[in-house]
Length: 439
Image: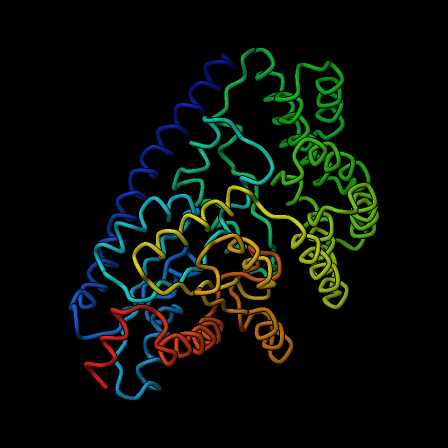
């Protein structure tokens, strides 16, 4: 009977996921069609200086208040004798790999004179380990990304400013265990916990962990055990679960979510901070522990110390790079050079532009590219108003998706660089001849 119930739950969840996934993909097609329709006027060959912005949700979102839309308004309002059309080809939720696969198609379609690039933030999960084909497929599903967005939005409405995504609710439901009896035992522990019978649930979880049925099963048991400890306020024991999960994967989403929770609890933040400081001592050359400490101090109400750790994490990150990301940026530089298109590379708000430059340092066309530094500008903006005035969330730790005001700051800064490109007449012969025709 229990197995039948588990099977029924699994099939129900699976059917729901399939329906929602289909609906989201249709919605995505509609979004792309609407974006393509809006960009259509830019196909006129001689009417505008065409600028195409590529990236993910930080570029795509905002509609008329997105940074590409505001960039077009700023350029046309402040550039005498020249007309600009900015094409927004930001695709929410996509990685630099997807962007590189489609960029030449977009270049053929819109024939831009200048390409503005701000991408790579969604590549973060690929730095640590290969999740395997099944989990990679699952994480590419629209329903997974939507669920993360909903949970993040809820946290923002509660003013938690959570910077790290939660583990997807459907992971346990969709990953079957090879042994049905083990699945039933885990389900029994979850049921006891949900009924408030914590002592019985914890005893069962501990027995399953000590039995050593393999790492994959142990990770799932630890996740459910950790949730039980969280509900009971057993923060010291919860830190032990967090340590176990981070030892396996330093970017484990469930562990990061519990750290965020602990850092906001009066009785939990000292446990979390002591653990993270010890973690930093164990890995002094890795940026991740400093990044986690920054988030923890921020959530604990100490933004000054948080910024110190964010700066340290950025400093450590500058000493290394993601080889896969570097390869994609270099490939893009080759495409721009071959097509004789001006390249403007934008660093994300609050981040050090030197890291972006390091990705392109080996490009033969490096000296021909322009870079937009958004570190000091955004840090000053946050200090002068508030974080919530500039960003709507904190998914990038020290930054998030821009509000209308944040996008305006970003657009104004990019516009300064675009004017340098245009005024210098240094982009390419096509653009220079265009200036000659309209000036």
